[in-house]
Each structure stands twice: as structure tokens, then as C-alpha cells.
Amino acid sequence: MTLDARERSTQDGSPVELYEFRRGNTAWRYTSAAQSQLHLGSEYMPLPMRRSSLERSAELGRSGLRVSMPRDAQVAAAFISAPPADVTLLTIYRRHRDDTETLAVWIGRVLNAEWRGSEVELNCEPSYTSLQRTGLRRMYQRTCTHVLYGTDCKVSAVAFRVSGSVSEVDGNDISVAAAASFSAGHFAGGYATWQSGLVTEKRMITAHDAEWLTLSAAPAGLFVGAPVMLYPGCDHSLATCATKFANTDNFGGFPFIPTKNPFGSNPIY
Image 1 (cartoon, rainbow, N blue to C red):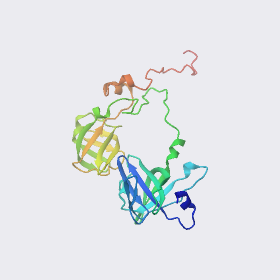
Image 2: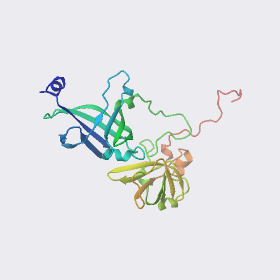
Image 3: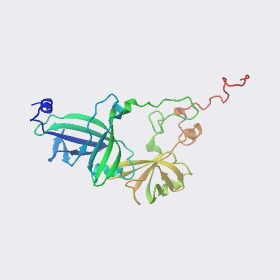
Image 4: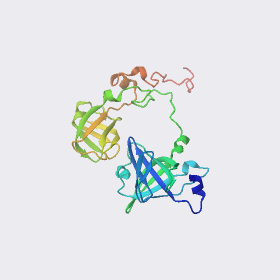
């Protein structure tokens, strides 16, 4: 009997769902069934789970999904202090017991988590909402419009990164001795990465002074003595592009825009 036939049947249906959470190269797989399930060579472990209903409406961007599970589920651990830097993707598959035909019924990402007693509720949005958002547009401006270390910038992140170890953690501030060798603000606007279990965590560096760096959010999984990678920031000016990265050939701004507006009120241009 096909999956569609069992879905329509009033007596032969016995549905179970498979939940695959993926963040970077790490995946967590759970199933609502009482026994573990195999799909495409991967094992889905049983976990008490429930979700909100799947809605089909004209406003697809608002058709979110909420998934509840025990608060100690591994996939939710990274959301305790702040959402992880990397996107957590979620794919929900549906099948019937004693049947291998499986269908993906929902694909999206996890936005945040809310702890409610012994459970954690993950707030998710469908993947096609990103298609409804306005993409980045290159502007006619003096500063560079490229993403630092991006494909248009072409600066090698590996070539400019600095490795070190954490000597102190104070809230969002961390102390890394290797950062003291650089002038104040050298890493501001850049980011720091470190390994937390099987996941690589990333935080933007908002300020830098001597060995102290201020991160954009609490550094989950970072401890004294842990190795960390620091990537310098950029203020997207031509001067910084030249002196800090020697990358003026790829500068994406227009630094020589005339300061006088020919369409202004002054009759003499």
C-alpha cells in the first residue's frame, strides 16, 4: 500500500514523523515513534515530541511551526544563552509504521527557543520565507559594499586570522593575549570562532582594546584555556582596505564621488 493510500485510509494509517535538525556538519535526528527509525542510512532516535499543525494559506510567510520536546534535548542546548551563529535547519519527514516510503512534509529553520517547564519549544519558519525578503543591493556610496572575506571582497580569512587561547571570560568580554599585539580596534567588526563540542560557534567582535574583546552575544561553550580564532574587522573605507588588507583592487566602494551636488540649490556647480 502506498503512502498516499495509507494517508487517506480510515483504518490502515499509522503515521510517524522524523525530525532532522542540522547545523553545519552536525545533525540531530529524532522520531515521534516509540522505536528508532532508519531513513537513508541514518538512525532517528525516539523522543517525546509534538508540533503545531501544518497550515496551508495564502500568506505562506506567516505559516510558522512550533516544535516541543524535552528541555534537555541536545539540539536545544545551543539556544540556552543566545541563538547559535549558524542556522539550524529542520526537515520533517512523514511515513507509516512498517513502511519505508517517506515524504518530506516541511522544511525550514529554527529561529529561537522558549523554555516552558520541563519542555523547550522551538519556533521555526519555513524555508520559502527567505525568498520573500529583499536581497542586498549594491549602493553608489564611498564605503565598500562587499562582505568582508566574501567572494567579491576576495580577502582570505585564513591569511589574516589570529589564533590564541582564552585567559578570561567576563560576560560578553573575553581576554585573549594574542590580541594585545595589535592596535586597538583591529578586530572590531570582525568575528571570533571556537569549537563547542561538535559545533563551531561564531560571534561578532564589537570592540577590541589590548587583549580584551567584546562579543555580540554570550560566548556559549567558551571557557578559560579554550583555543579561539580571531578575524580582523573592516570599516569598509579605502584607507583600511589599502593599509590593513592591501586589497584596493577589489574595493567595492566609490571613494571619489564629488562632494558637491550638481542638482543642489547652488547655481554655480
